Figure 1 (tube, rainbow, N blue to C red):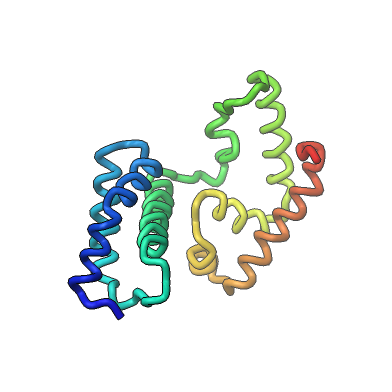
Figure 2 (cartoon, rainbow, N blue to C red):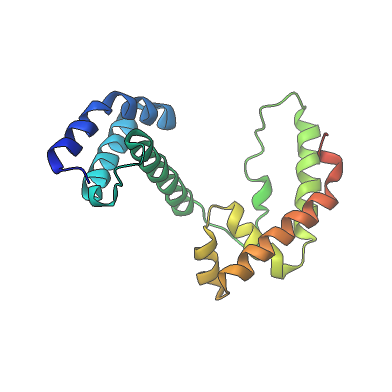
Length: 170
């Protein structure tokens, strides 16, 4: 196990790599600095969990990536209010592709129709999942077993793949 001083020296040695990843993830200097600081604190608070034979830089950068993902999901849930009558799949249809707006609107209508055709039992967990909820959060909110939630989301994906097979190019 590392002692505290060598652990801190090793952390200082990868500051540039940490900041580069933070900038890559956030695309904003202030947010990158916040992510860098949050990661540094988390790593220092959890240094006893570091195992000597593990790649230190990889471990630290994985902690940073996980913090970024968790913060992103938290932000999305905070700013996303879902009205059950709202078509959540058409909220942001500013697709950056070669398709015309009319084509993409028709495609989104097809996808929305396919999702709405799902049995409510599998549509609800699937909708929550694509809205940023984690499996365990969905299980808790719907009062279901974790395995049941995973199974329903998997089933929804399979049914949507069959229904929307024309959207896939092989």
